Image 1 (cartoon, rainbow, N blue to C red):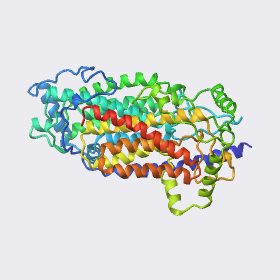
Image 2 (image 1 turned 45 degrees about the horizontal axis):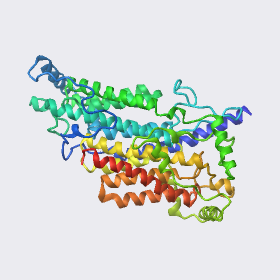
Image 3 (image 1 turned 60 degrees about the horizontal axis):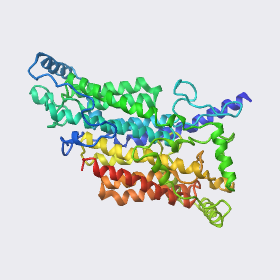
Image 4 (image 1 turned 60 degrees about the vertical axis):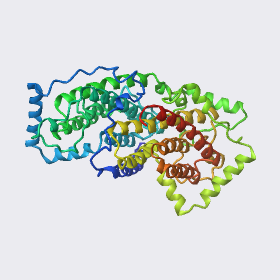
Length: 516
């Protein structure tokens, strides 16, 4: 028996390792991104509306020393010393981070989500262990970076980056200290030159704020995260873009901003989203009391539902009452003619696959070992943003809008899923064999559809010439769940409508944040 269990675990791990490699290949599409050369510096971004900060001056940044002081001249000499002895790895690091800190940290986030997007294997008694933030190195590793967790992680990091850079831009304009290569002609500019003031360093702000947020979200990766932050800061010094004091001021500011977001994260109710056995039982009995067939796990043994209380998490773009207000009406009754019709449609899709539809199913699957549906939309956004030559602060603002909409779409979607607790097609008709895995949560509404419509809506506002393409992508992502036998048509169509409503809140914020 023990041998069978060992083989089963090995088999599961082998399956998990395949999509993880695929995710890293997808991430690599921006490895050759060009150096960031913003079309404009957005020098007035210090006046943009932050998300949590009361204003850009909430955390004071002291004035820098004059460029004529011995201390500043020593910092210039430090840069020259690095440049005199620069090696190939340092040159590579300058090019890597020179493509943009927001871009690179988002790629790193996607990589970590893929690494931790692994559901735990069952215990010998058929129960399932839960990841613990208190002991992230024990099995199962913390976190299980499933779609709701991933959406929340992307949102917190992006929102904190944006607030940190808004504050940095305020102080940049206030103190107006030029980059080292402008103050000393013998300092070599190894990155595109800019008129943007160097104090405090935007890269150091990003390193400080992102490292602190990611250590909270991925506590088993603290050493790796700190290594990447240190690389980013050193690359800026060696490139001649920042002095040591630029870096120190920026990192300190970033860490302070992160503390404010950490306080919010610890109180947003995500920690209780897994619920208890009593919560799971109540969901089932409530559905039965309505005369409906409740959803149940099709895993063997049955797995606890994925984050049934995530719908109670505090959103970014609206309040908790709005989560309920956006919740759509009910799905077709399980015993209705409409549900029988929709179930038959799913069976027909599975029985008559086409090469094109199968490719669509797998392209949008974003299951175990991947960066999840929210990460897929981050990757789409990143590729399109590269060609727009945004400043770092505009990159951060745009990614924050996208990821807040994705997190809030996840909250509304999970609220709806567990309010109705609707069974999946494979539960109503066991003859339906899906083309991809069966998610361990109720059907109505489709998460892929809700995430995708929210992201497509705000992306279409940010890059209007691509709006139709984003809508088409969202519809394709939605249809992929019907083609794969995972969702009914009503799950997909209502999910798209609901996600669009969430995206409209992001658009409303974008119209009033001062960045247009």
